[in-house]
Image (cartoon, rainbow, N blue to C red):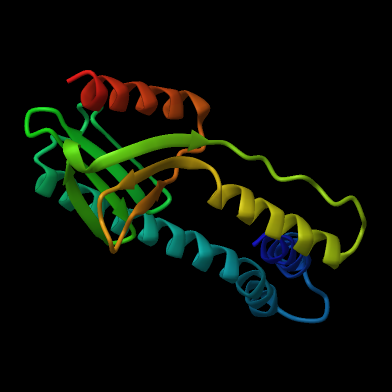
Length: 186
């Protein structure tokens, strides 16, 4: 992922920057259309990625809202968390925990929750000036992200362990306490 962004940065800087400079300074070899074309070639991929990211976030928010409705949890009450296409919601009255990955979610009664834990891992860095080092750093960052979050083990043959993305240690500590109070102490 980082390699893609480095490439995109240089692409935008090279073509978009040249187009912007030629538009502002004037292009002796071509008209304003050539400068506008260079701007579109340079900044177009960046605009498409931003648009795709916003659409993906809106879709994820809609799925999270549907999950909350199914779980019987009102949004904004502090009884839910959503991050990176995953989510968790707790309904203390119904004594259920709803877990989400992607567009799939499932609600479990407290009696089916076996254990939960949080993990925070940081990626190490390979120091070298090559694309191979960028790739190694990207893989390490991806692995660390996959090993970071709230992990809930439930009584379920199909989905025995769920990973809910939580990159903030304060949010992790908060959810550990929410689960302790709701499940262990009730």
